[in-house]
Length: 302
Image 1: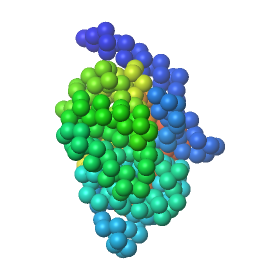
Image 2: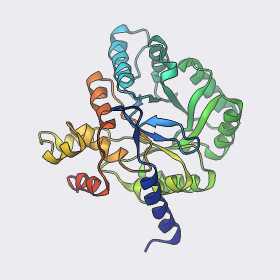
Image 3: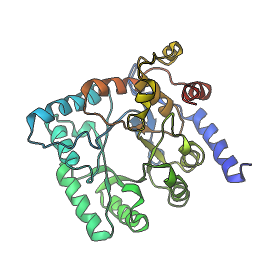
Image 4: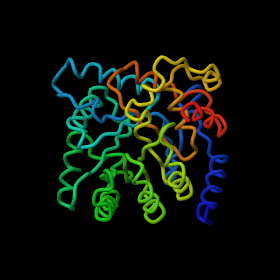
């Protein structure tokens, strides 16, 4: 049976969902959700860069489609770009493309530290600022709960110094959800980044209700389960009722399932293909499924 804490979290989730639905940035603009700690609004679809942006910044042929990916994100009204020092050259590629596009004021730059100890972490942050060509970063997250206690203290210091506007913690796997939940309840970071998809819903049990109850923004990684969801639907037509949510592709249906959850602030699918970025971004427009609609989508994969 659910305990009292779970009951209270569920009640908070329902109340906040009713009070804070996503709203468009402008008429017909991309839906946004507010960062609870400040009220700043973020568009609900962003961009991840793991693997996809790991190219040589001086390779014009490799950079050209990535510049188009960035343009597709910005044209759709998206702002958040998530990267990390461990993503190879992705930070440098992101910084180069954003500068070329004159888009620094239009983007929300999120990166990570994945080091143990203060000195190593500070070195990573300095490298990220150089690579991203930004003195102030929008979000620095502790990557995969590495040295969490020490690095949270450091990130709070960097936030006070104006090096970063927000701080967060991340993981990509279900087994970390209990630890993330405990940290949310105890430390109340600005952001949590976690995996969620129509085929991997563990975060919905305790972590996402805790984020709602504690006022923590949520970024969603692995929304397509590293492509596994597309393999499951290969050759299958999109159900006709997907049109009720203005979905014209499986990617849009998968993403709307995610961003319809009231705890989710932004989903960050990674891609190196401009057409895919444009397709993903369309999930930020039009009606979202309610609780019954989400379960209808999930039933396709039960």
